[in-house]
Image (cartoon, helix red, strand yellow):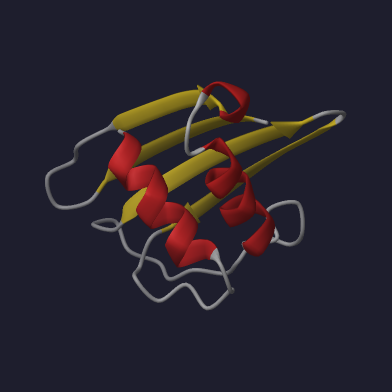
Length: 93
């Protein structure tokens, strides 16, 4: 599974990008499990509006499937699995 994640915005306006292949990482299986728990290939979660909130653009390629999601990290994403996935991605950048 290949993952590209870009986080930008927030109060400091910092931008971070991560590109990885889970097959090459010791935490690869755990990261794939987080993608599945977030139902990444399902409907994107709704999020709040706010110019000072961190914005995410995440693309996951899994075999023949490729899907991109854009969302705001308002700390209250109501979809199961998303907070854990974003928290893990934050540690990689």
